[in-house]
Length: 298
Image 1 (spheres, helix red, strand yellow):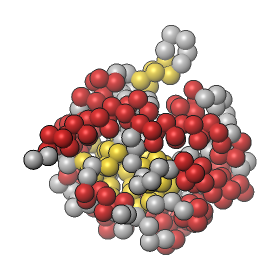
Image 2 (tube, rainbow, N blue to C red; image 1 turned 90 degrees about the vertical axis):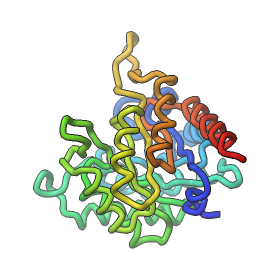
Image 3 (cartoon, rainbow, N blue to C red; image 1 turned 30 degrees about the vertical axis):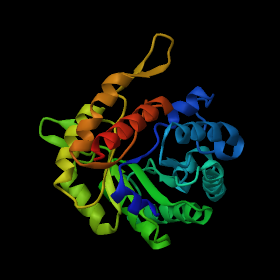
Image 4 (cartoon, rainbow, N blue to C red; image 1 turned 180 degrees about the vertical axis):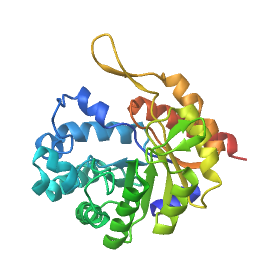
């Protein structure tokens, strides 16, 4: 069963945060998280194994920043293909039967003209180079995430569509304002989801920035804007500096999980966690989904 068929049959559970898990594993300031696919694959494997073990239907590759443009900040642009291929291989090696591998694609960290110096064709080329390696490695679905610029997200979707016929999941990150929800660049959910659907995305939604309560409200807004399966991956609140200098998140586990029934009731078909979430978060969400399935059985 392909992943889109599975999403029609049941709620799909993605994984949770990678960055905070890598920091717990020893990733230091100024290091490229993606380079660990080559330098420390056992650490990556351990984190992703915990997500599968907690109940994730889909675990994404450790390639969030593995476009040549993003890797150029570390002088690793020529290693993009090797990093992406290694990222896929790690997840495929541990994937349980019946689960899926997502090829993770994040923003370049650059800006398109007129805010920045790049043309859309340059972004498309960078995303296409990453997508080609991910598809070659054997992913089941492209997962474009944490996009703050609709134009950049569309570049990524078009690039994936040029490279492969694999499904494309695409999520942007929205802020809550007094006027409603908007991306950093000022685009509304309706505009974003309509454009992503037209560009060929297979499932659309939001991740990052918002806590689970705000995400539930956003899902209700998004449901009226598209016919595609909706994705929701909220943060565990906002990042804060703990007493020991560590990064902690403002939303506790119980509070975080409490809003997920509303996220589901409002129309999300694909859920998971973003910054501040852990394998334990995913285990709790898996339990919630199982309870709902039991309740729904005749």
